[in-house]
Structure formats: C-alpha cells, structure tokens
Image (cartoon, rainbow, N blue to C red; front, side, top):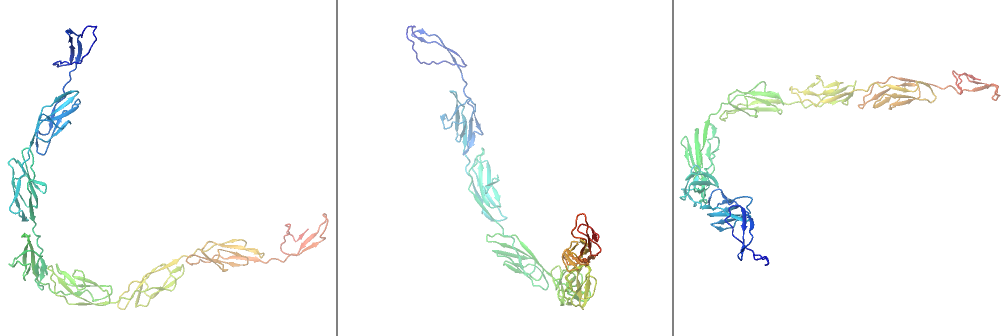
Length: 560
C-alpha cells in the first residue's frame, strides 16, 4: 500500500474464493507495487440450498380437459417460487401449479439469496376418445311389449361403454335392447379413464298399449228367462275384435248376445296400431223363482203404530221383496202409519237376481188412534200442604191414568207428574198425554209471638208490641200485615205467616191482652191550715180508692 508517509487510499475489489465446502476462516493478503499488505482475516458462512423437491398430486398422465397439480416443497425458509415449462419461465409463483398441457415442468425456489431448481416433472395430456355413434336397429317407436335394439360404433381406443338413459347410467354392454321410452346416449372410456363426448342421441318412444277395453253391457250380464238378451259394446277405438265361446264374432263396436250363456272377449286397436290387453265378460241366463204365498200371524187388523207380522216360507239364499219395502226376511213386520187399508204383496229374488211373479195381496185394516189427551186442572198446579185439586181429560171411551185410575177425573193431593192415555172402541190406545207436574209446597212453621210490654195494663195510653217470628208475609186477626203490631186495647190476638208460594201457616198461640180503665181524678182535702209554721202540721186526705201514690212516694190515703 506504499510507505507510511504516503497518504492512504482505498479501492473496492472482489476476489473469488473457492471452492468452499464448509463454513471457515479466510485470509487475504494484497500486494501493491510489490509490497505485501498485512493479511486480512475473514469468515465465510456457507448456507444450504433451499429444498427443491416437487410432487404431483395424482397421475402424471391426465385426460384432455383435466389438470394435474404439481406441488413444490413447503419448507419455511423458502421465500419465492418460479415455475418453468420446458426450461422457460411461465406464469406461476405459488407453491402449487395447475398443469393443463403436456410438458416438462420444474420450479425455482429461493431462500436468503440462494436458489435451487427442482428436477423436471413430465406431464402427459391424453386426448379423450372420439365420440361414438349409435343407431336404432329398426324402428325407434314401437308398441308396449316390443323392444328397440340400439347398436354402437365405437373408436378403437375404447375400453368401456357407458349407456345413459335421460342422463342416468343404465348399462355397460356393447349394445342394448330397451322397452322404455327415453333419450339414449353412449359415452366411451379409454385405458386412462378419459371419457368421450356423448354420442348422437337415439330417442326411443314406447307407445303404451291401449287400456283393456271396457265392455259395456246394455242390459244385464246375468239376466233371467223373462229378460231381454243384452247388447255388448265398448268405447270408440280404431279397430275391434270380438269373439265368444259359442262362436260369435264381430269387428264392429257392438255385438248382440244370444239366448244362451256365453263368454265374450274383446281387444281393440288404437291409432298407432297397438293392440290392447284382452277384456272378457260372461253372459248367463237363469230361470225364475216360484210365486210365493203370504199369511199374517193373527188377524190382519191393527191400530195405527202397531205392528203386524206377515210371513212366507223361509227359503235359503233368497231375497224377499215386500211391496212396502220391508226388510229382506221371510217375516215382514209392518207398522200402521195411518188408518185405512194397506195391501201387502211379495216377490222373491234368487241369487241370480231373478224375480218371481208377485204373490196374492193380503189386505190389512189399520184402525185410528184416539187423539192425544190434554189434562186440565181446576186449580193452580202449585198446592199448599193439605190442599187438593181435580185433574181431568176430555171425554173418551176408556181412561188410563198413571196413578192406576180409570175414570175421567181424579183428585190429587200429592206432588208428582200425572199423565194418562185413552182408548177408543177399537181398543186402540192414544199417545200418552203431556205430563202435568203438581207441586205441593210446604207451609211455614207455626209462628211464635213475642210480647214486648205488659199483657195487663191501664188505659193510660200505654201500648204493648206483639212481634211475630220471621216470615215473608203476615196476616194478623186485626187485619194488619206487618211483622209487629202495637196493641192498646183488650182482646185476643193471633196471626198466620205466609211464604213465597202463598202458603200460610197454622195460627199462632193466642195472646190475650187486658186493659183497665183509669180511676177518677182524686180530690185532695186539707184538714187544717194550708199555711202553717214549721212546728205545726196539716193533714192531706184523698178521695177513697184502692191504692194511692203521692208525689213524695207515700202510699197511704192520708198524708201528714
């Protein structure tokens, strides 16, 4: 660097040191103008290259339209990623790269100034198979019960067929036969599992068979010997084929049955030429049952509302058709609804619905009922205990009270419900009358009279109060109607009390009041001087009476 008298100088420089395989000290000596400098000591730290491993998530061979994911190392020291394809930088700076094309892929990873490139990974994109073609062998529209064969023409690299109906996988066969309507397509798969585009569709239309025709019988399919053979017909169709066990045939819409039991079958054809399932019908002819005989149990005479049993022979498996619409039984119980005469007859029907001739008529006489009686009374229906009333009805032939009485009018003293029915000359009984409710009300208890005052007193204006025990109404023998009365004269006093039903008690005990006339006004006589000295005396004397009472309390006749 020169002698010590020269000014120092500096200059940037660099040197190559290496190869270095481990971190270590480094000594540098510079020679300037032939003069060596002091040695300079330095320390070089050797860093590891970042982890440059990669992995493919899945297969390195992918189908056209798919992708492969290449993932670089996820070590914490890696700061940046740069992806390459065929050695050229491509757009991609994330840990994972999505490869959609064939090629060799690598990634450069960086960490603290050190970089490392991964080994290349080969991704191959395999083309999808060519689309197959399919076709229907014959017609693709057929009637129900037939099938459509669908054939396939597939590419040479096809390894598997996948048949779809209306988008749903249904088969892996080379060709298929189907009896179901729908849109059929084929997709083929190569060795890698790559699928082709769907083939051209084949539209299969399975025409349903017409429903089994309805055989309509204009008449009865089971008819009797007195009936008319029916005509068999059906709904409109494009073709008809009738056949019968007895050899009857027709290609018309209708066919006439004969006079013998027979089996008929029918198929129809629709506008597409599809033939229906077969329908069949049996026609049967039956003989008529015999004419029945009927009789009543007892005399054929009843009252309105009564019942009469009419019967015939009991026969097995027979329906009884009574003219009054009685129940299906060999015995018919009729009820007289109104007076007059009723004609009853019977036909019988067997299991074949054949009806016999009508029996001879049985005439039933129905007698009228008396009118519903109305009960009248000669008194309010509320009785007080101990009272009685008369109940009676309008005139009739006979009377039947619920009391057991059989007369027109009855005397009632007890509470209860009373009713009756009447009977006419035919012995027919009326409806029971509306009941009449008789109520017997209890009387109040015998009242008690409380005396407030004297029973014996002078006629000096004094009064005695007579107070009854509580009641709702009061009836004194004085004519008063209050609970209490004021009495100032001699006499006998009683009362009765009434309740809310206007029932009156027995009379109270008699209260006897005695009043005395006042004596005459007394006359005082002075026996001596009216004016006298304190040491003198004067005698006062009253007129003669039984008792005396002076104002100073003395009770003698004379007062000194």
